[in-house]
Image (cartoon, rainbow, N blue to C red; front, side):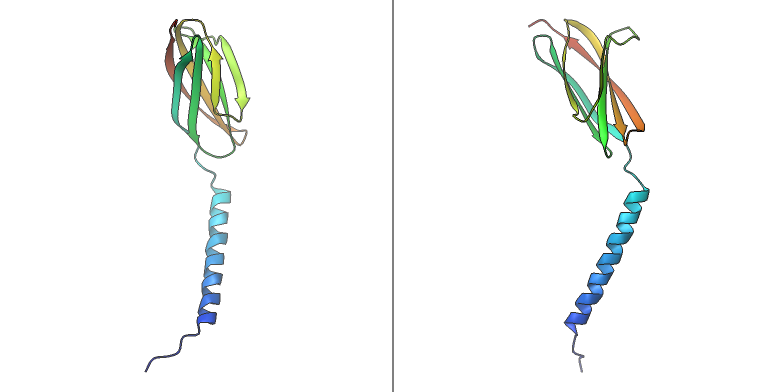
Length: 122
């Protein structure tokens, strides 16, 4: 013979289980911030002497910066300081450049990546 199921009691039990899982997940996320990394960085010429740099990254509360170097030089010719937007429009004379992107998470941890770009006269 089968027992009658108390659906109200079963539902309340499931609600408590879900609430416990949500609290455990929140504690895990609060104590283990996302791993910061640059997934992709692109620099391309979009117009005469204009380069667009886009930095795609994973993490939380991120800010982005870019330094521009003439190819072969270790001294930046331009610095774009940290901002919340992950794209930059940079005006450059024709030539070869290294674009170094920085991503900062929570105002502390940072990662970098570099790409080469050649600016053509159009």
